[in-house]
Length: 208
Length: 126
Ligand SMILES: Nc1ncnc2c1ncn2[C@@H]1O[C@H](COP(=O)(O)OP(=O)(O)OP(=O)(O)O)[C@@H](O)[C@H]1O
Ligand SMILES: [Mg+2]
Image (cartoon, rainbow over all chains, first blue to last red; front, side):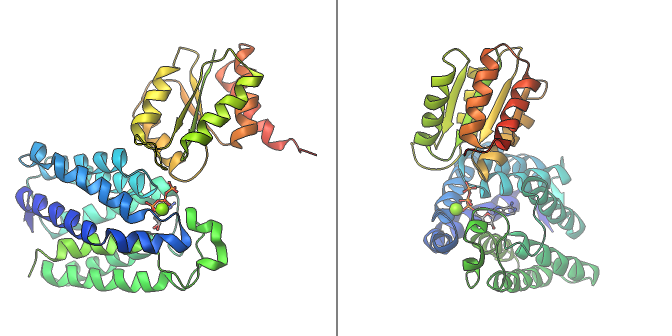
């Protein structure tokens, strides 16, 4: 499905898309959070891109691990330790590999979800990034099992993630900063679920 | 003495809590790790790590956090300090810091300092 060179390309696209959407993500964080999600994510991914030359010839596991470490040390909000742990666990799932197939990709996604849950102790339905991540991974798994191409199963994943973002508008936040606004969080989409969808779209953008 | 680190999204808040707890205990090693490197709001892995190291001794260090990423980032710092005696305390920041400082200054163990901070949460204020 991809080699380490392509993973580097994907991460660069992630950084670009996060940068383009930084204001949008921050605005989403205003009514239910502290108005910084896009700023946080953009700061983190800028550092990731800055450090890419140092790891671009490493294996995929090492590239993902470094990405996670950079996010932990530079994001500055909850999405730092959460996405950071996700990328680090994803890296551990494919440690030493220079090339990965669809099953490895599923391992990466499962490890990422596991990482977010390990760090944030949230479940599905608490209005967090998990409400996009979990359905996306389920859709990708179905696609892989059905023998679909990466372009097809990634498109399925993006569609499920977007539906997950819509779903976050209908529920009350019970984890993270948004839980402080309680019922007033209804009607607003979760910034983290939205940024996850953008990250998945960044991967999908390199497959056609 | 057990070291104490106060982690907050706000530089001012972390420093203020240390200042207040210092009125109770002037002696114990206690330091603030608040905000980002540039002084803005948020939590910084490096600042927390440096703060823990700056008050570390064989007696250990306890960390008291405000909320959200303060806890998650501290947890990651501690995970990467394998072998060191560092623990987070689940307690209110101001009351917990005051109780922990007093306990630390009296030469108590890390466990005792931790318990004092947790117990502080149970005291009613009026
Ligand atoms: N416990 C959690 N589990 C999963 N996702 C979470 C959790 N807490 C927060 N999030 C996600 O993080 C997003 C917010 O990220 P952001 O970078 O704005 O952090 P923050 O809430 O400002 O952090 P802080 O805890 O420092 O206040 C939310 O939209 C949500 O998707
Ligand atoms: Mg925020």
